[in-house]
Image 1 (cartoon, rainbow, N blue to C red):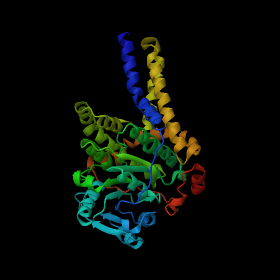
Image 2: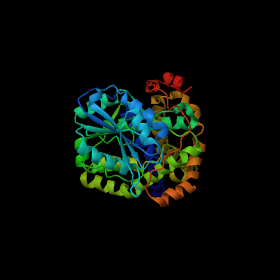
Image 3: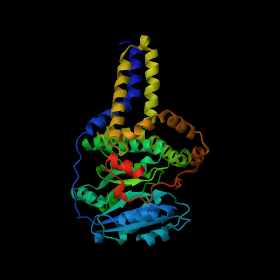
Image 4: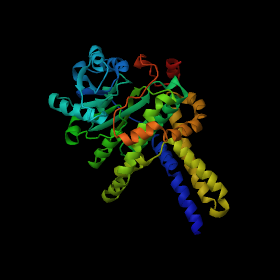
Length: 417
């Protein structure tokens, strides 16, 4: 092979890697997920909340109504640095409340570490469940979590869904993205006994795990950081998509900006600080767990993968006389993997085929994400360090009963119409 052909092939492989990886995870995800039920474990459901007075009552009501023996779980709201009446609203809804004020150590990670430390000393529960303050949950959440704990799991991530997929084209896209990443990709990784990853909402930790590996993750994406800490101890997060939590998502570009900046900057920090160390550890320990986590944190969002494959394909077509046809074949395989993953995500999402019209918005969405990187919000958060900024959300479907959060597309459309 000529050097220029080899160079083109390597470049095409690099551009196509993400699509090939997603395709492989999609094939592996075809394996059925088996998840039983149990009531053997005692739980504390921890709800970190910062200025969430408009949402907290419906979340607490959703949690107190779980199909689980009432004497075997409690709902604890951590009102962290609140300037509104989140604590009062949570108490009225029936939750226990822990109030924390620390203007120096701000952020969800600090709130969870503080709460876990106190609860480990004051309660005798078997496990802790983390649920965000704008969330509705499947009534059988604890039964499925207890089943995993009973069979030896120490860290569990349940399916994290979009609560309001029908609110706008943006939430439709997020619904497909969440399903692709949180269900399809997580199921594929679990089929290889790798970590399903942590998503911040719907996390379950055994008491023994938090005693051994305290939640000392304080970055903007503390969930990803803690999953890396667990991998260092050889602990893989188990996937549980037999149950779910559903979080309210922002509907407009203005509402989405702070959330997108937080996610993107957080993942950038993880890539910079942990990407190469994870790969070195994977080689030295011959650890597939570490290698997969390294891949996960360097994996760009799907919108970016589409952009890279598109640019790479145009360049490969133009340079075919120089570099040959193998780069195009490799890029074609990357497209097949990516599109297969996307189709699987659409098919498995509550939106299902109703998400297709939103796909036409992807080019504009990619352009918006690029613009966000040059925004004042990006510069402010990049220079300000970890903090807890509540995402602004338009009024949506916060009062809907969780039973309407259907597992079928037809029921889902009735709920959001």
